[in-house]
Image (cartoon, rainbow, N blue to C red; front, side):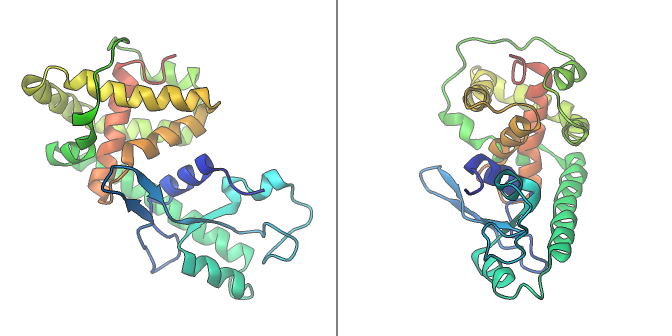
Length: 247
């Protein structure tokens, strides 16, 4: 077995799209001119995947081995190093690296919400210009707390949503300004997220997995922290005011 592609996407999101190894921070996303972004980082197993692999534990199930909690987002070089020299890279040490790195990424994102402005939002939604408008759905207000409960989201997702609400007025003002220039802009923005949302639901994803896949979608192709956070701010805005996470 191996980690699924959606699991790798979530891992990349939690890692900020960069190698988790301290002092590396290599960007691990290939931005294609065609607009198709590819995650090139590796989902490295902390506790080995196979019997002869580094840090292998026989009492683990395959599901546990490929679970995101046992995976570290690394570049190819660092993945090779931790497996070639396991004495230097113990399970405890790698788990500490994972926890610290993902926490730093989360904290940086939450702090950046306060600085989201029009330039970052423009970068985050540049793809909308090629998106056809939504043909149905609504922009009726639904309380975020209701959606959180309905989608069984954890405190982690709740914290992202709460932090993202700091930028709600800025995103709303940006969408309104864009609508003055292009009346279809709000519907195209919504359509892009709804297409991804319903596609992931069709694949069976829900709850936190679905939420994090949508966060990764909101950040695709973006490298700067400010732009990546702006992408999440847009998702949180839509989470509140339209039928993303509504059905």
